[in-house]
Length: 283
Image (cartoon, rainbow, N blue to C red; front, side, top):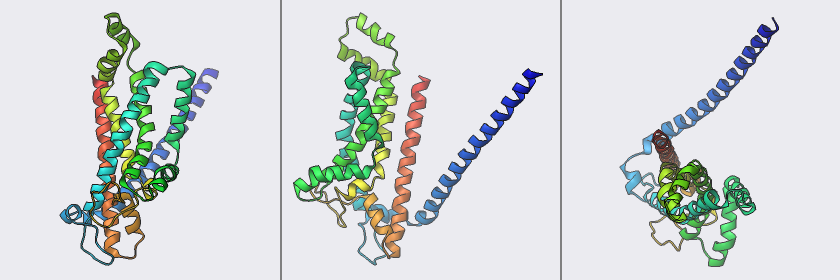
């Protein structure tokens, strides 16, 4: 009798918790679908060839696109990845392969977690103080450095986690054959964790694709076409921010289209990262 009552109580608690979990999931999905639906309804109409072939229009003009902003965002994001990816990869490798339980490694993990959760506007202010004020002007280089600071902790965390999933027995087998430590890491550990490392890079790129706050303090914006990395450079997040606040309907339509474009890119990168992760587990 007591056993039956205990079983019944567990069943009830399980049903309640399952119901709460499903409810929370549905609430999250509803908001996500509402946001995506609003972006599609408002922005799909402006997704045309002109969006990718024309410059941002002057105030009051209904004709124009986001070519210069798209180019600027891609340029700064790629530069940020070129700066932040090697740093994060090497730091994550040291934590997983050398540091492990050392006190310095624990300190690095703590600092990395702080950076990972730090508001991006704080990072933007830091780069503004360190680079922009000393250079005397806004620039794409400063924007790329701000985005690189955001990239590093993401890559560090994913690199360490993926490398720690590689069994130590594989490293020991390679070492027993006389392979030096650096060859074990590059030819064994990296290959075993390859899909996870690529996933971390994709997630880092997705993380910086829509960042606005750090670029407001570093790259600012540019209404014209420019490839000068030592000057303010147009970019999608800041352009969307400025156009969305404007009273011009054409600018607002472009802001919705730019928002939808960034959302599509981020969703595609996340789906690709999940596919690579699943493929790596399958192997």
